[in-house]
Image: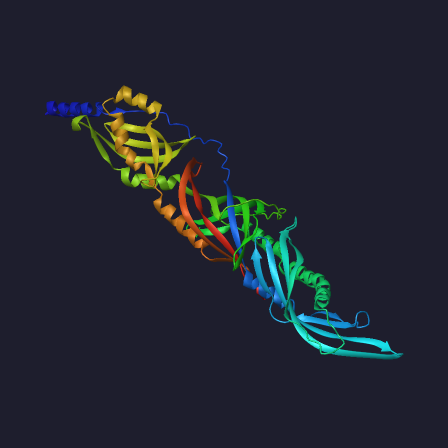
Length: 464
């Protein structure tokens, strides 16, 4: 009996003596001083001004009598001019043409003396004339709209007809008198009404200030898009029969922040600057943050409890625990083994985005040098490459759902968003592409470039 007990003990000792305990050095947990600089983005925002609304605005502030000459003594004529029908606008480039139809009331006549007897004959008549003006639109240094209106031509719609026999009315002289008297008056009215009622600086300051406000992108977790505007510029005016187009370019840095709403500081609207811009394309950078705890949970779900066999089935190891952290620009996987090898082993790899699987994977994944050396000395039967290949598929993180969620949030944010009483933004998202992976103390930060188009419609000018 004692013989069998001794045999069992010897066999048990033999079994345990075949197991290899390794003691490896953990790679240091450290992170590069990565200064994440938010990407400078360019937003090109085409503004659409309705010519119909501008026309309504001009007509609203040019009603009634526009000019009146009550002195008949200087040239035997009295004149009163009032608007006869709505002013119409047409636009070419940065010039707006106004056709101003006017009613003309004239009182004119002839007087003199014959043989010491004074005589006079006066009559009142009505006519109508259309004057055409052209306004050049520009901006001053402080984003205030600047216009310069000049007279272009006139046309009689209905010439006044006097019945006084002795009165030969030179209509060209009358027209010239009207033009001389009206061109400065009406031009001044147009320039003054545009200056008073088309307050471009206020519009742009409102938009500029709004840009500083963090934009909520999601609630689980709370995600905010911050825009820090730096520079604002304007492209030349263009137009068609219905719209005046003015493209505002914005240079800004963008960043995605998780957690509570970030603080922000408003900056002053920069001075006016002219620069060519594109068709409304924007580029901005978002960030998807994945903490180590979440990565560990996902990997543990598939790896912990896995049993791998080697050496023709003679050797077995079991994965009991997996943990992740960073070592400068490499991700470290700490794996606790039991079985024919006991102890911790460490693998390292570079986190990269795989566009086909939409996963963050470990590039150049391999055992850490210290682990590799100790396995080589005491457990060379453990096929290093085979072991790495077995675990590699689980050292990855699928971010497709994060990208889809970010895409949906950006699209919803840009879809017909009322920014202000007079501003409506409409945008599209054309591309969402991860471009870099950064390791932080908290986890992985996947930097994602978003590209699309945005338009800003200006409406309600006729309400002023």
